[in-house]
Image 1 (cartoon, one colour):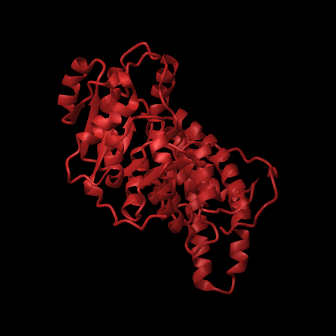
Image 2 (cartoon, helix red, strand yellow):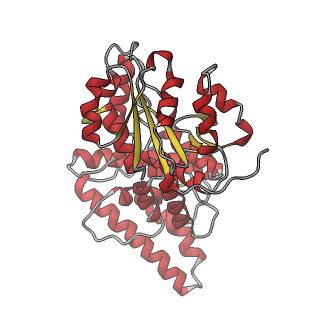
Image 3 (cartoon, one colour):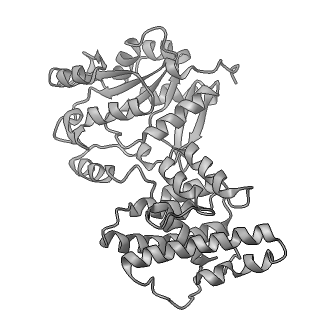
Length: 387
């Protein structure tokens, strides 16, 4: 193992975006394809900038003349690769050769891996800033993805390399100097080679800011959330999404995907002190501030009798599910009211929380009608979660 290197200053990190290939399997020039209201290269550059990367070098080769005006409009550095026909390694070399001496590391970002979230890039940068690794790989469910961060210690070897085995072979020789950071982003693994890929990823873009069920499960696993809390979260999510869909039909502007993710994740820190706040902090660190805001209020919320938002829906759904069983608010709060009977301050708090939940229930029913006093149906063993 080589000695630990100094920490990286995040401001000295650049991005090298590879956009020099033939796009032969796509049948159209990838960097200029439409994607989320921009070109594909425009989307990738905007995503990197959102993550805080200011120095961006784009390697151009095939069709470089058509790409040049877009790169000028994006205000990025164009690194021209006259040898692009030799393959991707030659483009990596051209990108590295274009970096100034003050750059200590670069993120390698192929233009055809467009769904990596800005929050994922930020997580990589934070990991690199606290580690001495020559390479930092993002991983989703144990599989390495893009963009890896590569330190200056490997620049000379990249520039002098003959390309045998490509960059992957070169990096593999330094695997004992690499580290990994878990991310919660399947997009870091998915490239866009064919027309169907373009269609599917472009369609997925709008909802990709919110984690899907698999990404939520990955976060719960990473936080070592208890299995009972995960089952409870799934039951709460089922109810919360149903309420959100009915509210949407009634004209209430809600994001049902955000509701589902927040419901699945609301007990991610179950068992820790002040678990709602702890869970919200964890989710902010994971890169999902909107979900963190809803999770933060799932235990205590101040309801103004007017605004029904995602946090309100998750809060009420949580209070209508005990373990995995649908219950009334009165049944849900009965254990807390009994437990705190001899503790006036705690009892007052429990009664306040019940009153808040009842007010939320009335506000939602005013918009969609009765919630449907359904018989308590056991989906699984109750956990006796606190109100």
